[in-house]
Length: 307
Image 1 (cartoon, one colour):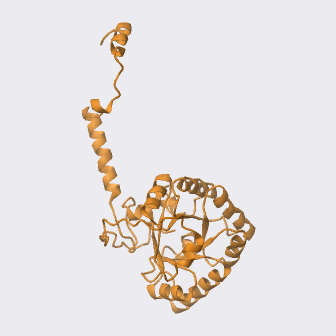
Image 2 (image 1 turned 180 degrees about the horizontal axis):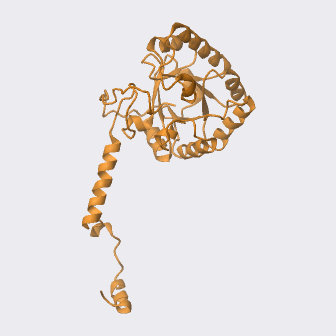
Image 3 (image 1 turned 180 degrees about the vertical axis):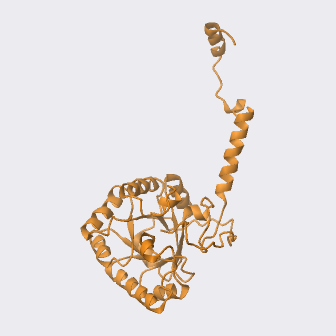
């Protein structure tokens, strides 16, 4: 979902500075639960960040976010693919399990990939169960006005996050990664879909790439929290993709991305410095080598001779 897109997207303002670049938010001390997230409506803003492996999961969890999303955007952010459509259930289970190893406090949500819930409701339930049982997710997310699937997965005991607006698994139908609900009729339809998904049992709704007034209206009307990405500041919380937030992705970036670090540049410079030291013979230094026990060098010289 929420990632750098290739193709028809306008460059954004990813070079804006964070408002509090040195601030670390610890979040709640205990494990974040679905009832706690649901009860946050109107009480506090929620923070969600994506993760793709144990290190990213561990770091975002330690940073104090409320929710960690293993998004199908990992197809682009971690696997170098042009869109999200090719990521498989096995890959999502694999990455979810890796992230789960690092997340101990935040609520871990896993995306249901393209083709894992569209064919039949029963198949949607089976695949949601896989993400929980095999992957270690505590909730799943699926795109679109899928009330029947949301209701069935919820009845199976699995919390569901819904997702409306720009739904990247449908980008072919939408004609690309474009802002949705710009026309009055489309906005009205989106509000109705959001209400139906909440009634079906979704405990959280992601709103992606829609005009702020539409997101604000949905947020006011729904009893469940909303998470925005490119949907303005009236939502109950916000989500960004790990690689976009940290400067690990390449442009063009959507306008809602704010860079909080440039880790890509830092990593490239660090690897280049390592390569320079190796080629110049400066690495490893004596302090970076394990010392030999007394007499070992002499014994080896006696056996094999000295060079």
